[in-house]
Length: 83
Image (cartoon, rainbow, N blue to C red):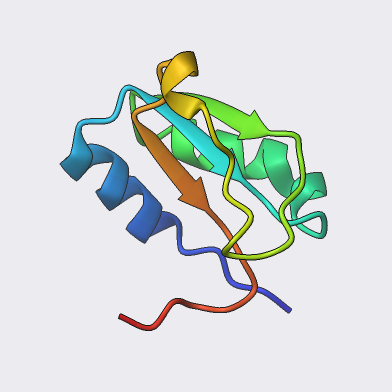
């Protein structure tokens, strides 16, 4: 079972002023990408992109996103980060 915190993502997008957002999902959530996109698009003005490559954990972040004009990366994983 999983929980997707849409409110936290939306708050982060709005507070950062991000115009182009890359979402990186683990394979198990990739079938939910359209649902996630709909939720975020309906509540933000950001352009949403999905990383189609690998996502094997928190250390597997995509590189070169600045070349795509990405302002914010949202990385969804299985375990919450501890700050």
